[in-house]
Image (cartoon, rainbow, N blue to C red; front, side, top):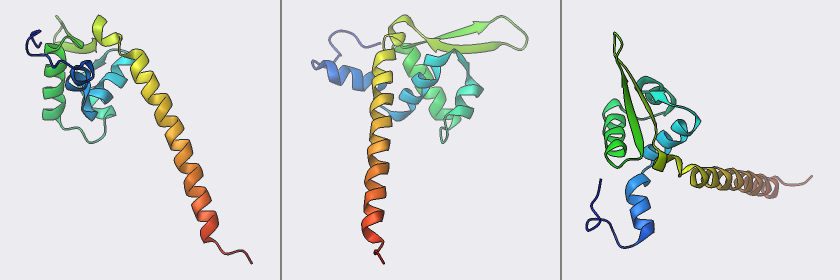
Amino acid sequence: MLTKDEMPFCPVAVTVGLIGNKWKLLIMRNLLARPNRFTELRNTIPGISQKVLTDNLRSMEQDGIIVRTVFAEVPPRVEYSLSEIGNTMRPIIAAMEQWGNGYQETYKDNQAAALAEEIPAD
């Protein structure tokens, strides 16, 4: 976790620094639904490598965004969940999802209109 002196002055820069890569956002998206095990995360985030997932989970745990829980079982079971502070990102991720849905619809409408202009009328 960054000390107060290490944090950027700009709050947007702090947020971007903590969750500003696509992998962290996708990890958070999954953990908003429920706690996940490592393999579940890897299988539901297309294109992420084991190393990148491990590095991002460690970083997010160190920053206090997620909690890693080890269950005393044989074999050991590890689950990742959002921490209390990580859970406060819920409305931000929801707003990003809503914006993305709107953008996809607009893009589809624009593509359909462009195709309609290209097809000559008989």
